[in-house]
Amino acid sequence: AGAAATVDWSRVRLGVDAAPTMFVATWSPETGRWSGGELLPYGPLNLLPAAQVLNYGQSIFEGMKAYRCCDGGDSSDAAAATTGSGRVRLFRPDANGARFAAGAVRMCMPPVPQAIFLAAVHAVVRANVAWVPPAAKGSLYVRPLLLGTGPLLGLCPAPSYTFVVYAVPVGSRAKGGRLASLDFLIHDSLHRAAPRGVGSTKAAGNYSPCLRAQADAREAGCQDCIYLDARSDTYLEEGSGCNIFTTHGSLVTTPPAAGSILPGITRASLLQLAVVLGYSVREAPITVQDAMKADEMFASGTAMVVQPIGSITYKGRRPGSLAPGVGPVTQRLYSLLTSIQYGRAPDPFEWMIEV
Image: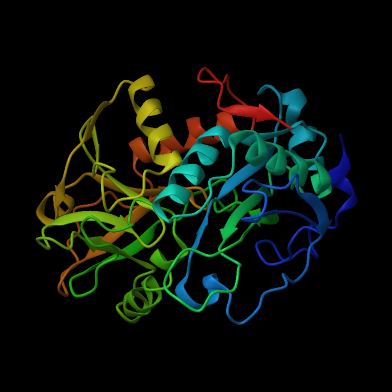
């Protein structure tokens, strides 16, 4: 308790300065199992040029957060939120572990057992507890990696693997408690994922192709892209690193997470919370026309949590149908989710796991 107060947050480059301790474990064909792993100072990994991950990209990752919680919600918790005296909890780490294991199977990598995954994540957060920001200032982003590090110049699974967990403090996107909306370009010439490909897996190779599309979005005056399905160019799928939602009245809709869409953990949580708040929920395809007629649109993900979409641009058109600023559905979902994450509201689903 109080460890975060030892860090001068005015000098920390949130999202840039990694926390000082990481976890590393290895898998080798000789043992056929994962080593117990160890905590090490954050630093370079020793890779040969022939490492499979460098040549063919056999790699997956996860993204999750640890929060310094207020443990309640009354005024007596205000000091904990700003000084860093609250308890530290992880948000749904078991779900990340399950998705990490499924991704490993898809990419022909030895899955990290859930017990090892969770122990590593907890160990990294405990070792870096001073780097968990006060609740009012952000959270600790935790990044597990699974890499095909064994050298083999051929298109086949690596002979050995490395499991790494490191962490980076990140600031809150709600500056002054207010969410800023983003403008999205619906890209009509580049796709994020192919049918029956690895779009539903958090594979590293899914993300670097998005850089070109994001550059196109910036040239169009937007911050990010929404990609259409590669089969018909009809349905909205997801952003470069986020799931998307629309609202029509009290109906909340998101594309079904199947095949080419990542099953986001924040996405799944919001669907449950929408029901709690009395909204109707539907997982169904969303056409461009549906989006243009929506009352609200928002994006979700571990990094952004919930971000309102202020406008969408498609083939040069930017309709003005979306609610300006933050719509009421988006705000209610964001407020309830973050209140649970920071301990300001009850956690009926037992998502928050103490470190």
